[in-house]
Image (cartoon, rainbow, N blue to C red):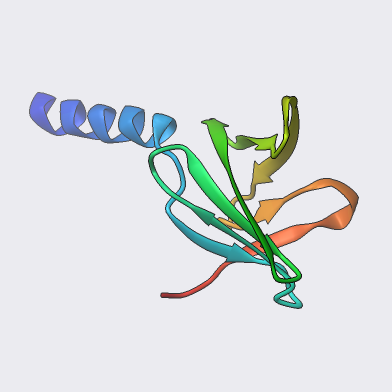
Length: 96
């Protein structure tokens, strides 16, 4: 029983620090965010692509605004796995 609880604790702790992995898109498909577990994200909006970095802290993502290292875009990881941003922005994971 102790081993089982130890395994559960290790899995929970590793999930807290994990980055995202995969592509998320808005409902219209005009914006996509492709996250790597290495802390990098490729953002494509209306055909224009840029790569930047992100940090995950529990249910909050902070994406560095490209060209503005002191500015961040904050997204919330919802219970269903989607991402919620400012002004009603919602990104859902795209199936591979």
